Image (cartoon, chains in turn orange, green):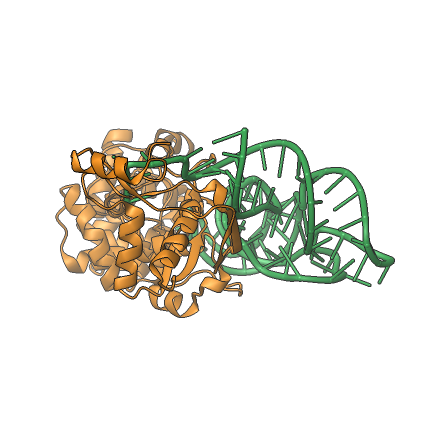
Length: 354
RNA sequence: GCCGCGUUCGUCUAGGGGUUAGGACGCCGGCCUUUCACGCCGGUAACACGGGUUCAAAUCCCGUACGCGGUACCA
């Protein structure tokens, strides 16, 4: 020990006057129990022998966090300190400081930590390795709904006491209380976040969805008129999990398919496909009123006259028009794509798939 | 090492002396359907372990194990 307590006053004064560097520490009382009542953890007790004499003012004259924090909070009249679990060990130091300064400590609440899915705290590095966005910017870039992220995070450690779990911000604000925050750490679950995202996306009105989705279309260099985009949104709204899905998974709503899913081709493009699709395209082209009903009755009519099941035409047409085997109801899709586009794509597929 | 905080399905959690231990995500099956989603219905799966206390313990107490955090003139 080399401090002012271990030397005579004379020596201390001499060393001070000689300009020797020094720090100012908190003199932690010996053998007392420092206790505080945490709103989340309950009573936390620490023996003062486990607390070092904390540096309060560094040798360069700057206060340490511990001092600054306490002084700041007091002067700002802070009533509640709500922070992560990792601060629990320094809280007794702060309590001691409040006592030393003769101030009333604020209410303390220590939130459980968010852990990586593999355990351990969710650091930037561990998160990235597991495909978990870490910066708010990354959540935006990946098309996460702000409300979904907040909702998901809020339910990590807190629960409303009911079985409700999808909350928008306002609902959350009125439902939340520190009393219902648990004290065990929680692992980040990307699957569940994705689910929350889909829930929140579905709650969006079409107009709002439009705005969410546009940046991702821009990113892909897709220029789309609002009224067409609106129709597409109406068509696929329930099938989106992330805002960017429209520009990726449903890109065929905006550009002709560049390839046809090989598995789908094998399964659905039978020997009579080209002939059926070709004939359907001729019929569509001749339509004077192009809507869901007319494209459907043309198709069923064709199926009947060729004596095949409707599926024998529906599946190849879907493949021709979207390049995939999955998607919205075919007739609604055709209606949205429009007559010219449908005819063109059907012809292309006949030419390319034979 | 020492100090602290934790431990209910794989994950998020409800429940806190007597419950068929509830819900959600995921997964599996079914229904719907031209496909895939959505939706709906059903299934899978948990009280870390050992001692107490008690008529009765997932629930209260102690210990162990395990996990996490903190141990700076960082925040």
